[in-house]
Length: 297
Image (cartoon, rainbow, N blue to C red; front, top):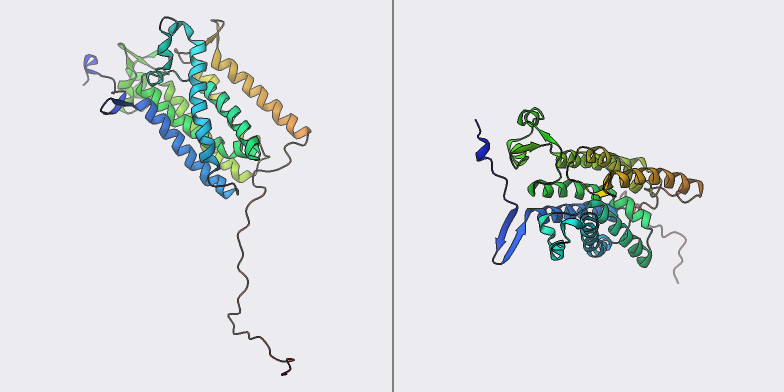
């Protein structure tokens, strides 16, 4: 038996080191970025890119993504920050919009690739599964903050989903149970990671791995956003994430067609595969150099 009054939310603070407070929200976002980097870096070396390339990219893209995510969120939720503008910097309390992060990170990657002399599409294709993995893990930061949830449901509804007790209890917010849309999106993203890892073996046209990621995420986000109760609005009517998702899906399809027609997608993901050095055949069978024909002087 459980008593509703005894259900307490999980502590959003992971640990404290003197005056420093580390929140699960930031910790999980950092973990997602780190694991995504490991995945991308491993694949980048297989594709013949410098081993430090993604580490260097992350140094620029991660801060840009955080700034972009927060700026995007604050712009569409300014009424919550106008009375205390300084609170716009309190990112540990939540409020990072993934679309803002993606826009900033992609722009950073485009500039980075141009400066370093690499193909942006090659880098983006390699990074696609890693981005989705980072998003899947990052959603659990929302879980710890009790945000990114759907409409009201009963406890039995959550139990019928075969969810563990700690998730059910965390979905009990202000005396009401809510749908764990953070979990729906996390699982959708994990499925997307598996799909993209499989598509690597299919040898897709360059650039289409990243575009597939954008379309896959947008389809899931559009559906899940329809369930969420905490969302950003455009003109106070349209859900921002749904509008962006539709534009991304349409834009992605148009971009694939355009790049193919213009011959911009002729290269394949597995092109330029590094060749393994083949050892020269050895004379293990006792072949000796013939000394015939040599004249002594």
